[in-house]
Length: 165
Image (cartoon, rainbow, N blue to C red):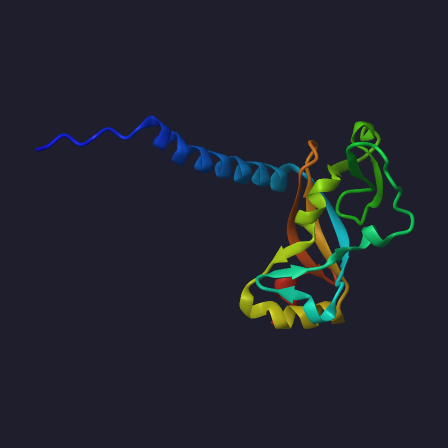
């Protein structure tokens, strides 16, 4: 039997690093989902002809169009959420160094992750119609460290799977 060449350590590292990083991302999202402070954020479709594209529902967060949303001129800005859990919070924009008075907060760079929701491809048309007929919110959780994850899409306060046939 011939000896097989040893696998170079650099190859093992190159394979293990992405797997490890993916595992950390999943673990962080799971911890946020289980321990983060829950809120409901209103959403609005910004183009009824293009509300559902691919496997994602695309929309705009309601608080982004509020005239009361303060402008932040700091180098790093965060969205500051104030209000009881499981409610629609009052949202302001502050320097990330000034989040001590917030009930929860997240960096403005995370907003892109909140403006699309994964849906099964075969449910896109029905969900698009339901969004025009019902008020829509996201149920999100925000960790103490500023991570935010979407838990569910709500239509008239109910999970979308209960409303859309």
